Length: 276
Image (cartoon, rainbow, N blue to C red; front, side, top):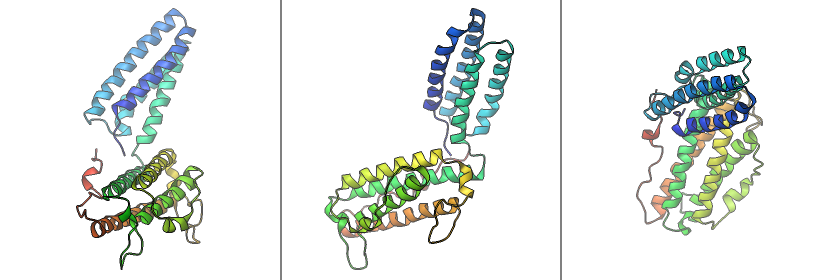
């Protein structure tokens, strides 16, 4: 669940300008005047929305649909009734806005779950990045001590391998090929190398969940898990908890085995989106 951002509405206006540029030349002077008037009204409405979004007054699909979709439909019908090709402008504008709304719509339980997973996973991966960066040098990342069987470096590799396989490769068709054994056998990668892998994981997660049809969360996950067929939503929630579990292990590993025992903020409640 994310607020509409001003830059997103700005991109809609820019995209519409391209559409308009290609269509206005095709219509008569009267049609062009009608289209220009419709465009001016639309830009004014979108500008108001930019201001409202920036002030935090618009954050849900319903808020935006109430203001815009009926107007777009009315204008589109009116212009098409007059035989004006500029009606395509409004149809394109409506499609662009609806695409945005689909990515931001918290209206169903499945969408709420998808957006919550995206937020929590990215938040905790960024915390993992901060944990790795907090190590004073590369060496301690690969240390173990009695009672700690996995180094922080291996835990990081395990986390990113797990998420890139089950999210990116399986749901997002990224082509990532996992080597689970190497996640626990590799040694001596630098902090920079690990951080780059975390960044790649964040990018794949965001792209995969952005494009994931929320209805798939209620369907079986595409491959068996531990020889069982489980629902996609529950398995993805399991993966989020799995990440957070290992994040805590990395935090304690760093505090115990380095000269930097200071806390790195993890699982920050204050980062949760505000209810609207």
